[in-house]
Image (cartoon, rainbow, N blue to C red):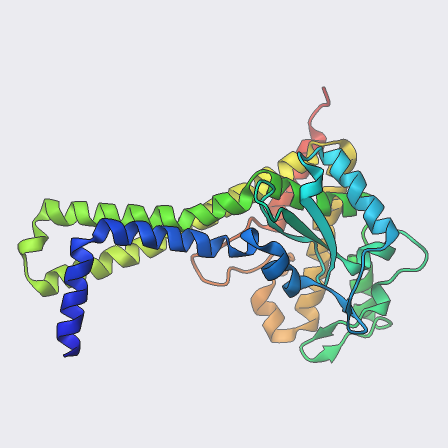
Length: 311
């Protein structure tokens, strides 16, 4: 009975394959954009920082900093961007400025004290591999130093999130999967007809379908990584060219990230050695995938921008 049901399902898909393809691509595209369509309901709760059972509110200094960056970046429809305090080491963001929900940008809590005498980094509890970081230890002091950013670096870190959202980065990355699915499906059907496999043995058609799906998946991974890395470089370039101050902040920001990762590599032991390279870059999670451009290459890009003669 199961075999008969499977055969009927395959036959139905064959008859209505165009409709199934359209629905599959639309569903995949919508799923990839879920965080960006409803950022307040889906993304913000994941990163919201809490204190004493209540969401942490932006300090007056962070509100001023965010407004200044909005002005420097010259984003369109500034009221479409909302900031909140994020429980993370680096700024995070989600949304599309032209959608009704707008965009949200998460600013790390330790940004609010980085350029004052009262550094708040040491007031946060950080647990790594089940152990709380001792801020007075050698590694703790080094991590506190790596997490402390100058106002220029803070501005760059937040501005690059705004640039990414303004350039429709989430939309472009979300479109890769449905485009690859459609391309794999259409090319697979065309080649199957060209080779006359529809009239061939069922086993041969099955092996062909498995091969097409495998090639399509690898193509998607490579395409997504290429697009994601291109967006990283484009975002950094656009942010660094706002002014020399932003470019200097970008170099410091990536140097600090590399320093943080080197410390994490030490604190996390064997697991840290599998995640972080000695340089501070991230090792690929899978052998053929590297979703984001390396931090050293992004830093070097900004250094090259700084070294260019100013017009």
